[in-house]
Image (cartoon, rainbow, N blue to C red; front, side, top):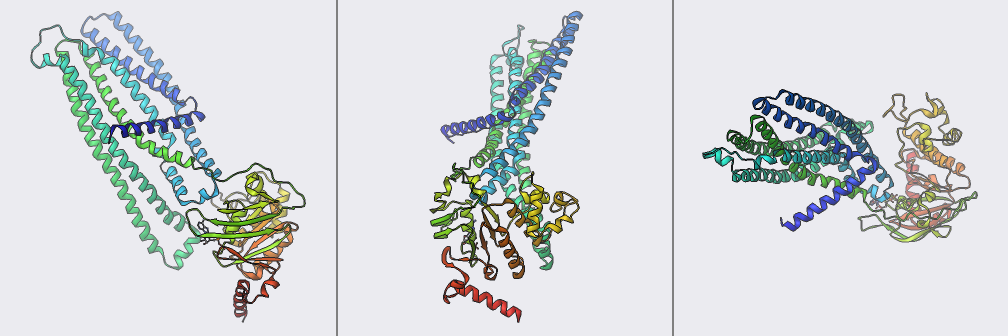
Length: 624
Ligand code: ADP
């Protein structure tokens, strides 16, 4: 690697760390101050101890001045006591700040995810990025970074103290006539050589740690990917009661068992690989450390034999050089770890920097009691990100206030995509949509979304209370929730629940939660749509698991409930939508027919007639 490249890497590392520190300081402003005070107090207590212990020992073996010794002992005890107590205070602050960092990091990440463009939330690559950040947090998150930085700070303070303590040893020489190895040890050449040995040992450990850490980073990423697949089989599949049915009926235990065993063994071998690397590096480092330590002890011992200093100073120098060596080697280890740690932090920043491409607009939507909101698609085409195929092609369409619109078509014909564009989950690739003549991208996004109530086919209820689920909020108007439940046909069922509106839905977290059937969940989702009281209500096949009669009943009831609102019903069962005054037929991303049931049937070769006849035949056969 060229020097230029290394400088570039260091620069990039410094920028990432700087940005991370800035971010951390916004929520724990005193973190680094306390880290410094903690490291400084602790090191000062230790080194004052080494210094005074050496002075006392030299006094015991030399001058034997009891008063001087007593003063030194008193200074040692008092200073150490004060410094250790001060360091304890900082330590407690550090622990609290570390916990805050952990929590804050999670909140920051979640807020970013919530505010992301929907298309990014759906993007598997971006989702995988988030997963990797969550999985690697314990070995590469912001909280981990702060503990690493504190560690580095401790290393630096210890290195400075050690150098101060041993500096005079290199310049003090014995005034006795010396010969042989003792004379050599007391020479400046030996001092210089010792310095070189220390530097070489640090460089060697730096390079080997560098290699190990970049391998660790790759292994950790593989572990994260493997863990995800493993939890898919064991968590999402085996633990899910719905999936368990399939597992039993199709006797898939062996299939899933084999898959999870295979992944588990991949996982174990990755962990083994990681441990083997750590062990190999650890052993190498220990050998180097002990050889260097042996050399240092010999050097200091020979200088003591030469009479350069007393026995107390010998112990002090030996201890401080050992500390210097350990801290410089640990410092280089920390620096190289910082490089791989920065890769995790870069992943974090890359995720939180995911650009917002949607235009969120500023114009407030008009608040109209008469719900007179006209929506129009102007030659709209749309391709999903990363695909070449148009999911919607040249769509021109106008919704008039109070319309009852059915959207029908084969699977994959673009019905749901049209709704996603309408609700601005995505923006058109070409063309535009207007609300009362103004491009919907110009409206304030949240304000615009207030106009829509959608029950998606794959709607989701959460493990919150019934009331919170229906209102989609912690605070809710109980009367309005009951009235929505009544309209959706869930009043009696919820009334009979032990805690009424406060009953938790599902038993995920609460023992007194209620499990509800698919049909009941659909009714709750419909109640949620009614509670929102939006100008447009859209049902996107939420009744797919119901029989045609039940679906027809829900659709007709819903139709009565929505009154003057504009309602859009998507269904693959044409019979459910007969009551609609307007039927839109989609095929291959295009709107190919638009009209009432009767008018569309007048064209016997049209798609609608084809679908209608196919389904009518099916029902006729079933009846027979
Ligand atoms: P429908 O609701 O009529 O069943 P959709 O609107 O869901 O059809 O899908 C229209 C087309 O867009 C299909 O070809 C489908 O495979 C594709 N599609 C839907 N969702 C995505 C997505 N998130 N990413 C890529 N392609 C998608």
